[in-house]
Length: 404
Image (cartoon, rainbow, N blue to C red; front, side, top):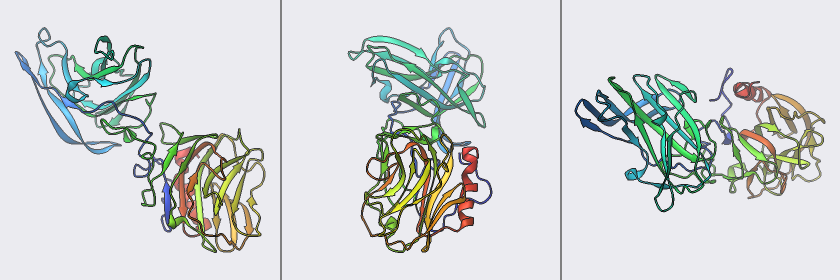
């Protein structure tokens, strides 16, 4: 979650934003959720009675949601030693998976007694023909964190056998002679290690999030296409410097031609290896406006397609490698300015004469193949020149998220 110091970020004039801590802007990585449903299983018999249902719950840090539950008591372990609580596949049936593959298994749960067991997160593996391969529970009470009010987010990984082609996902319960209510609010089973992916960013049950569904401008300007990014548990996204980028269609609200004032800001974590230029934000191949990091010189380069006016560069070494910093560019009708951590680090008098274009907005890319190596988050674009105090306000409002 974002941490704020004082007033929040400036919103006046904000026409575009990509914020990896905002669920309206960042949905989560492009992954598949093999868990399709959360169905509680009722059981009754001698000395055992479990009733099931669904209820609306408030989970701290996640908000209001529906949760399935199982409520009951078992005093007859000889007859019901391993009661199935929930199943997570449609009709309790097999779903396709891949052999020799690492999967993340994660749940958001609560039980009133505090009891835990490895089989809360259980899976069976089968061949493509349906032959049994193996089974095991993967819940580990050491791999969970409290969300508050008795709710926990738990995670682990497992690796399928080479012959495995199908999987069944369930949850079992082994406590006896104790009345208990067990809630299961969210489940995710996905290829890869996403053990630290916050439940806010899990795909919905039975869905696959595509690269065009990862980001969306919450102001309604555009959907974005993410290409070859990496995704960290804190919501930051990684660019590899060779193939990673985020692109959008043409956005008229970002067409700052002529003497139109504007401000573009972003948090970056540069890894200054590879190519000479690392694009942060640019408007089109003709670079109506763009700013990049120069790798050998470790400085910010601010360029426009204006006639007869040179690019603006900050001093060599003004950008720090392997560290978070808040950078931006601004045109106020008279001057071009480069910012770092709320302070001006370069300025130039310039009567901007940019020409209009209908090209893409590109994040993580400047000119063609000037690709960023590192992390970029919280890109914000304004259709006016922010004041010095407003730029500092933005920096102070978000710096706590990056340990600054």
